[in-house]
Image (tube, rainbow, N blue to C red):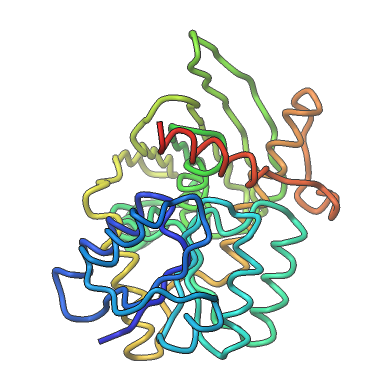
Length: 309
């Protein structure tokens, strides 16, 4: 049985993951460290419901008593520092989406991976059955990919990163640039559109809807036909968790390398800069290293307020 140590239970993912894991015998959350916004009552309820053995007083203590760490706090600004403590202990770490929110943190994660750190992640949509099934079709049958269109709801980064990770997987190449196309508003609902170019000639468009949940819809245009699919949210987390368990049991890593996970973040960082600069095209290579990125502290405050309302 794989012993998982979880850092923070802020979001819905810890409960959803725990529910999936308890259906099998491969892995369990066994210990928790919490310094997020969830109360002691909520943490103790999580411990009781899912049979955790221990509540730790530090991440170092947590890393010492489990096989792998799951960083699942809502504030991506803290993900890197939290993960480092597991990596220092020689343990692999899964970092939930968004893996980080700034270019400087992306570069630090990439350096850690080059030095041999095992960092797993991040979005479950990247590994969705619909995505992997499309990618398994031989190119001679489906044709070469020309354009990818994807949708996401809820917010501009925390949820939208899901569809951008899926697009990154489907494109199978490095993005060159992102451009903000425009915004539509209806009351408090905002829809924004971004255009991405890849170095293999593929283009992509992703739409984000703020303040409203939307399904993950994907349309892939190829040189032969058009593929359209909606991601089945009910099966999302299992495909991700199964790959993590596979790695822990066999050493075979079928998750995306860190460089691909951070690349999806860079696509969105360039899109944010383009929006701030009136829709001008922003090359990923020109993102300033001191760019503040997406504000994880602000998101945590807003998420906590909504969760506790």
